[in-house]
Image 1 (cartoon, one colour):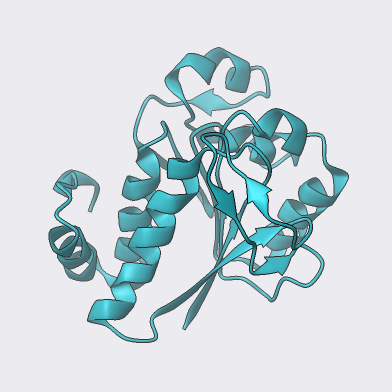
Image 2 (image 1 turned 60 degrees about the vertical axis):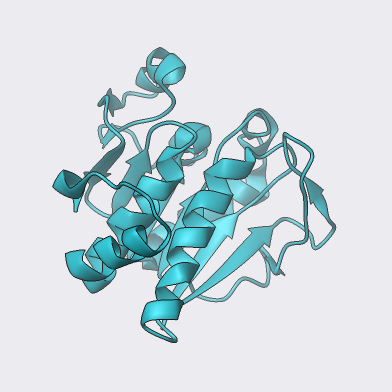
Length: 192
């Protein structure tokens, strides 16, 4: 079973984490016990996302189990989350052992602050390209960009594409495409 952790923080953009959460969990309806997806935060207190959704984390950064995949969403709250030493250290520690460390939209800035994107190819929200370039990142205008074990997705809805891309990497194109069909999402088959 692939262990997946999605970081959440106050003012996180809902679709940034709900999209990959849905896709990466849905595979279990086709192939049971394929993934275990958990929401991770600094504390177990409920978190209010940017558009008002309240979320209860599954575990804390401190108690998080070993992860195969880390997903870092963005949103307005990223500006505060980027300054968190605990989040930065968590991302750096996960980079050492995880198969993939990923971001959605402006979540790329948490990876950049942790020093993981220097000299790498990455993407983010289209209006933040220049800001990301200031971290010595080669910014690519694409839905999903992979550079080694770092995978970034550009734009709020790109979390869905990130989910399908990860399913392809983990279980193959046919499983990824089947999940897309089941949730009636027209995924770009060129990326799968």
